[in-house]
Image 1: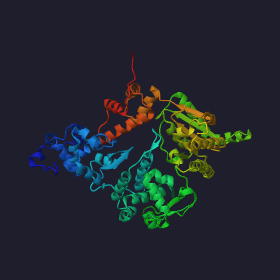
Image 2: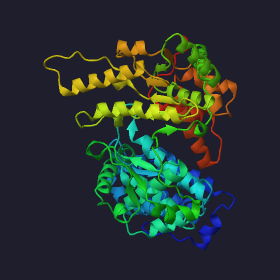
Image 3: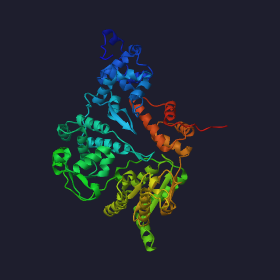
Length: 568
C-alpha cells in the first residue's frame, strides 16, 4: 500500500462514472471506520479510493488517513485516536506516519495543541477545497485572493488564536502551539504569491515564527488600523514565544528589529512591560504600499481589545419574556438621545453619571452576545478587558494594570463620538468576596483585596458604561452587588425560545421538528449553535441535507445529558 495502486483497464470499466466526487468520498468516509485497515477492505473499496486519489492528487494511504478528519472536523486526532477510529493497534498507524506528514505538508491538516493535548486537525481551507472537488498541491490552493480578502483570512487566523488562548470554562490561559498558527499563515502565503506582501515575506531568510509575527503586525495595521502592539497582545497571540520575541525586540536583538522591520515606539512602564512595538516606515513601504497603498505615520495612543460596533455581526437572540423586557429597558437607556437626557437629569440631582450592569447566569445563555448586540444596535464600541492579562507576577504591577484599564477607558471615552462600553467578560475572579486581612495574610491575598478596592472605587466614580458578565453569583461580594445599577439574570431558554433558536440557526427545520428538539434536549443557546455549525459542515462535506435523526445523533454527541422525561 506504500505506493499508489495502478488502475487496470478492467477496473476502469468497473468504475461508476455517474457518481460524483463527493458521493464517492462520502461512501468511503462512512465505510472506513472500524475497518482495521485490512487489505480486504482496500480491495473492496478500491474504486472509491481511486476516485478520491484522482481528484485530490493523493496516494491511497494519504486518502485513508484523511478520512477520520472528515468524519469529525472539529476534533484533534493523535495516533491513539486514529487507531481507535480504525479499530486497530497504534503500531499499525505508525506505518502511515509519512502519509500524515505529507497531508500536513500539502496543507490538508495541521499540528494543533489544546490544553496540553497534541495531535492533528483538518484545516478549514482544506474542507472548503474538498467540498468543491478541488485538490491542494504542495500546500497551494487553486484560488487567488484579493489583497483585502487575503488580510481578512489572516485576521481570522489570528482572531482564532486569540480566542483559543483563553479557556472561558476553566478561567485559565491555554498553551497554543506556535506551529499551528505558523502553518496556517504559511499556507496563505504560498497560496497568494501573486501579492507583493507574500513574495517579499516568503523570500526573507527568517524563521516561520518571525514571518508570522511580521504578518500579524501587517494585519493589525491594514485590517484594524492599529499601528502599535503591546506586550499583552504578543502574549495573547503567540504565548511564551511572543513574550520572548517582545523582549528581544526591546533589546534590539531580534531578527525583525535588526532588519529594521519592527521598532519600539514608547519608553514607559516597569520592566519594559508598557513599551509598544510598531512596523517601521520602511516595512510599510516595502510590504504594504504595493498591495494596499498603505503608509501611516506614527500616531498617538491606540486602544487594544476594542470591538467596533460596525464590525459586530447581527444575530437574532431568543430569551424568556422577563429577559427580553430587561434588555429592552437597557437598550432604551443606551439610546444616545435618551442617555444624554437622563445624564443631564442625574447631574442636576448630584447623582453619579455612570451606568453599571451585571449580566449573570449559566454558560451559553447569551450574556456576552447580548452585550455585542446592544453595542451594535446603539452604535457603541466595546473596550473588552482580558482579566487574565491584567494580572502579572510582578509585585505592584497588577494594581497598576487595573488602574490603567480605567485610565485607558477614560481616554477612549473622551475621543469617542458615543460613550463606549467597558466590558469585563467572565469577571468571577475579580468580583468574589474579599478576604479578611490578618497577621497571617499573604501578600497575594493583600494584592487581591487591593485590586477589588480599586475596582469598587472606580465603579463608584465611573463616568461611562460598564458591563460585567459572570457565571457565578453565590460568591459575589456584597459591595460589588451594590455597585451594579442593573442586574439581569440570564436563564436557559424555555421550550418556546429553544424552538425559535433551532429555527433561526437551521431554517430548514419545520416548526414541529424544532419543537421536538427543544423538548427532548435541554441545551443552552450556545450549545444549539455548536450543533447547528457541525450539521452545516457535514452538509458541505457530503452535499446533502441533514435529517432530524442525524441532528438528534449530533445532539447526543454534544453533551452527556439525560433527555427530558415525558409522563411518569
